[in-house]
Image (tube, rainbow over all chains, first blue to last red; front, side, top):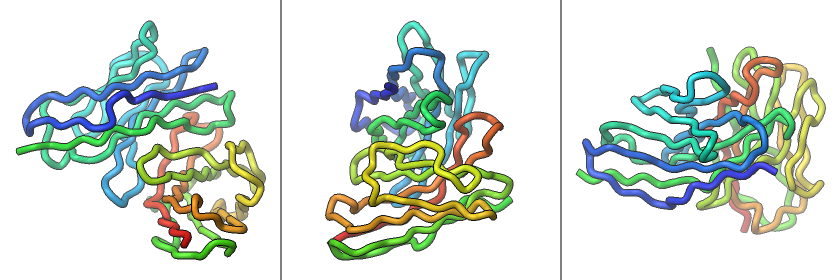
Length: 114
Length: 114
């Protein structure tokens, strides 16, 4: 079965500092990988996705993520964090074989200090 | 292009009652998935509807049921509500046959069971 682990429940970074949020997945074949962001009381917004091809994917709001098959990871990065990036971030994996459902990690709450 | 909409925004029910949540899919999308997000957790897949039929189900009891209508909108029904059903219920729409698992989420319905 698929599973997603986000090891960090909370992360605090200073505004302007770089950010890396970790995501590890468990799945036998090449998965479809996603990062979503959720602001308090809101739904999920897709930041970026990986289906195939170039392992470094660019997303919205200056985010990028790198797929590393050997490490079963899909970490999210941003070179310079803005106060408006404070939110909860979810990594998710999907596969046709599992009925098109998405399996989410537990999320990482990002706090930005000024 | 109209995004995914959900109604109501908030709902308060008591144990044992029944509830219906509604979702309108994004324009052009024919598949709707429902997720339950308990406080402090990632979303969990409930089920998916395609062509008005259930197309995959997560680990939820039969008292969670759904419908999809010819216009692709969908309902989630929960019978015999329990306290643990308190959560944010998210609807996501996608296009079957398109980019697999690229799902677009609505703002959610916050259900509180007392």
